[in-house]
Image (cartoon, rainbow, N blue to C red):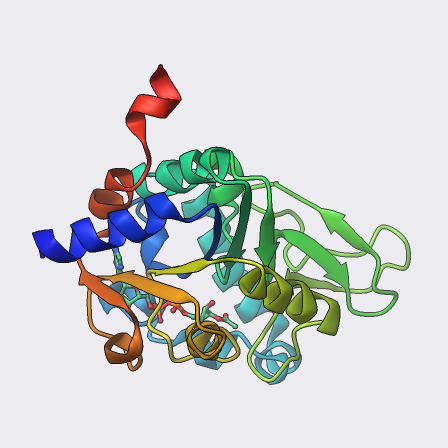
Length: 247
Ligand code: OAD
């Protein structure tokens, strides 16, 4: 393990450009349940059963109840050492893009600036009728489900659901960020939900170095240059140059 960490540290230190892909695992040390972990179920529903247009059409109140519960947990959470390390790395590199599947906003709270939220944000509400979109940090939400200020229709979470397409402009920015980086770091994602699941492969095909940090092995662990099975909050802080930041 120590050898792998040193190898990864070496690769990261030598790169002037870095793209990072994060998933729910990076926020687990902040107390936010992952999707496929033991605490991923809410009232016996899996995320796949609730995060879809069909589920929302069937029972918007149930889906909103789930989101309201998650908003409460996220509202009380603070960035952990893994998030902080990524914001230090952004300061250190000439080019840095953080691509996240997370909707919790903890990377922003930690100080990262160049962030692509490919699954949107839990703090955004979008009208199901007129598409009016607002930021909303109210916890708990009242009324629930929330209603559009402009047309009184029901609002939905501003997140991307299963069966929905990530906007092309977002995908384009993501591909460009990977293409323009020497190294890609993949942190805390099970690697089973597309398109994020294929981003590491894409980077490898473009001859980038790819480093993975995840508690468990993932389907693509064997094709990455370095795959470290450990907590991101313990490993990521080893990757930035403490001397350069504090001197
Ligand atoms: P998952 O819950 O599928 O996977 C989280 C991964 O993080 C697992 O492989 C864990 O082993 C790992 N992990 C947990 N704690 C960790 C820690 N402290 N350090 C490092 N790794 C840790 O979450 P995602 O891969 O983010 O999509 O899920 C992808 C998408 O599926 C989500 O964005 C969401 C979900 O359903 C939508 O809602 C559309």
